[in-house]
Image (tube, rainbow, N blue to C red; front, side, top):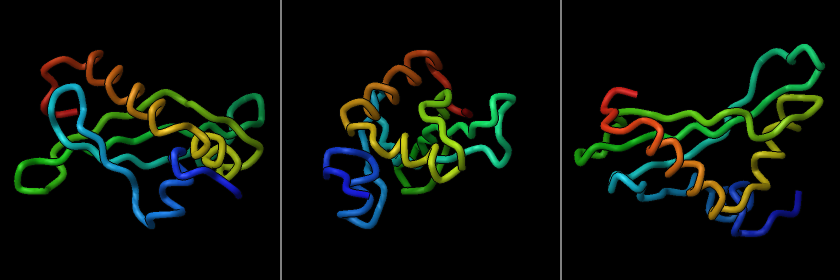
Length: 107
């Protein structure tokens, strides 16, 4: 897989860790990709973003999950599709999720 450093998968490949973002709520988040264990009715697997929110004590204190953003014939294929998202697009997804969960402290 040849991904640019400005994609989610490329960033992880280059830096060996998930990227971090400051959300529109001013809180720090890291992001990962997860996929279904079983295919949907159409035979494809879905993959989505999982954002972990961090406390001031550097401990996880919440999370947000996107809808499926990639699909594939295998879980790895679906995750690779999501890995092609630009970091800019990942940040847009994070901020949209924050906006749709205002004041949420226990997501």
